[in-house]
Image (cartoon, rainbow, N blue to C red; front, side, top):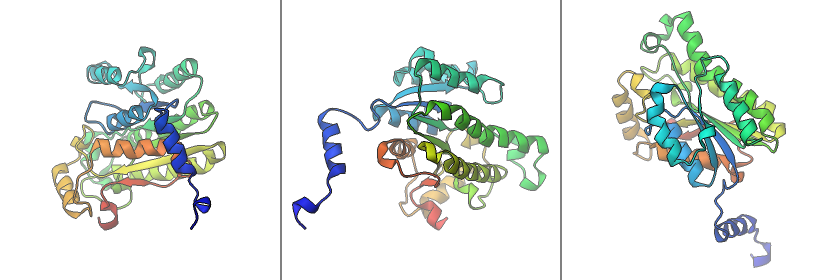
Length: 277
């Protein structure tokens, strides 16, 4: 093969960016929903987005959580105007976040949804026994809020963009003690595929990301979670547990132009556990 026949566009682009001190997300603007503290998957993602050059807006749930997230916003160089309250159960708060982004930036390149909730009594019980109100709340917070986010982000993504949400292997297979969140995450993944099909012609990509088990605040509500982590470490081909940094870098890659034709599929970041689990 002669030198003239080798396509080096990607290498040339990477070399130029490196020489110019540019990162793949330089100039990109994104919003992160769902950081609870410095153990959150969303925090791992936020660090990766920022590390690759993106400018960020982040949200906090309420005044109680603010003391945990305000230092993180400062570490990310988030403008005070773009550090915003957002409880998707409260009417108008999600809409206010995107209205503020519209005023401050006028556009948006990516948005991360890392929000999930089910009432404790329903999460710890059988799916068979799940209450109607508990099921509706879990679906509203964990799934429908992603639809709402997509609808609000769409008009701001005038040059295309990327939407991300966090799923789990329990959406695909029965995972002991995952209970009602299994059907909810399955709905979230199906929703992502439909959003990808509907928004794709506008250049908007949609990717559910499915990490292996990570001991986050949200995961602490799942029964016998330590056993789940031990099983994942023993069975995953990598024999390693995933970290929030691993998930962050994989998700940040999906936000770059190098992933511009990846959409609709669930992206597993689990050391290969899903192929043997």
